[in-house]
Length: 93
Image 1 (tube, rainbow, N blue to C red):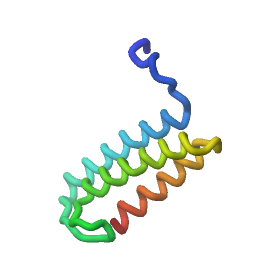
Image 2: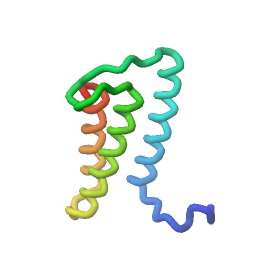
Image 3: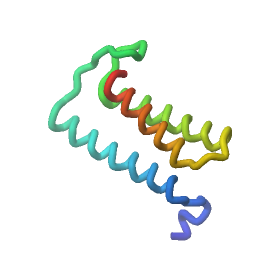
């Protein structure tokens, strides 16, 4: 465990990274079972499921960083907002 001793592993951070790993595993299985077709949603480009996952995770990370830096409220609220945004991007992006 000394390998990870440099990072302050709080519960929200651990949940976030575990969730990302589970999503990547699930998306891999989904892609193998049912290959994706590029489509256009509210994002200004045609995207596949993997593209939308990447863009959603990237923006969720920025939402979490902004929440941490700009508010003193619970990080769980920021994580919830980021999760909702990720779901919106995955569904309608």
